[in-house]
Image (spheres, rainbow, N blue to C red):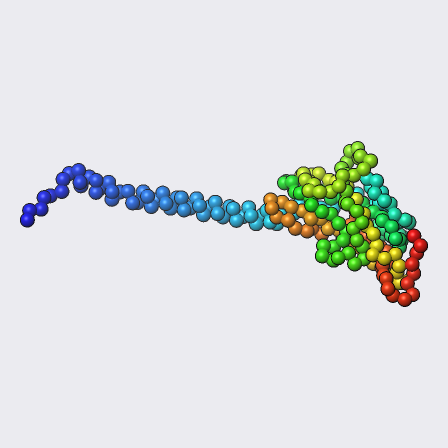
Length: 223
């Protein structure tokens, strides 16, 4: 049997084919490297978004009446001696009262505020409960006579707002010598699909007789 030698064009094609795999491998390496870079960037962005928390306490606070909310009965500052910042005393009462705080966005990106409350999430409001919608007003500039109900408030960078929270005591009755102090409030914020609670310090701690019920010898005010 006679074997014919390869034609010139067959040799050239084999040489060209021999040169193709290294180029394809190089392109594959480059594509793989770019994919790894993109994955690493996505993971980093995901982690930064999950941890992003630019909300802080603002510059204003105080007793109620913000935006037409109920003031309550007898709220006043106490323990202001010796240069102390004092506390806001809330006497035992059956009705609704309110307090004002403020929050601001110190970060470069906007966040959405879903809720602001003095009642700790998951606590069930053992001592205090929410008694009406939380409202907000702009912290600077002209303020409207009534506030806007806080619902998915987009807080832009360097934007500060006043917050009004309506509250009610679990009971107007109390035991002499029993006190409760509140020094924190809670903000539920959302950023790029990530939602979490943020704990902020009140501008002024709240102090009150600890509300109690069903115990003999309690003091129960009329109001």
